[in-house]
Amino acid sequence: FMVSIDHFRLELLTQMAEAATKGQLDILINSRDLCRTIRTGSSWSSSCCSAMEAEMRLGDTLIVERANQAGMTVRYLLPRNTHQKM
Image: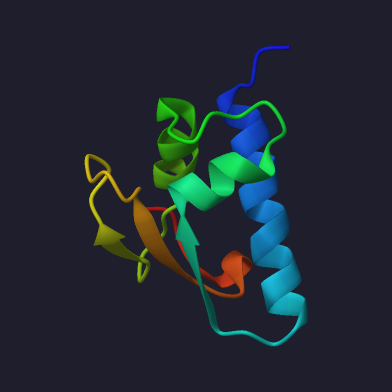
C-alpha cells in the first residue's frame, strides 16, 4: 500500500505521546528514523518531512534542515496540547 503523510503523522504523534507519558519535556525526532518505523516507508520520504513540519508548534526547534542528507531533525516540546500551532 501507499504510505501517506497521515501514516507518518500518526507515528510521530504516537512517539510524542509515549515520551510525554514517561515525563519527558521534549523529544528529538529525525525523519530517517521516523521513516524506518513505517514498514513500507523509504529511508527518505517527502511525506515524512511534511508530517514533521505540519506538527511543529511555537517553541519547537528545527535542528537539521529538511534538505540535509542526515534527515530533517526537530526537537518537539512536550506535552503537545499546551503549544499553539505556528
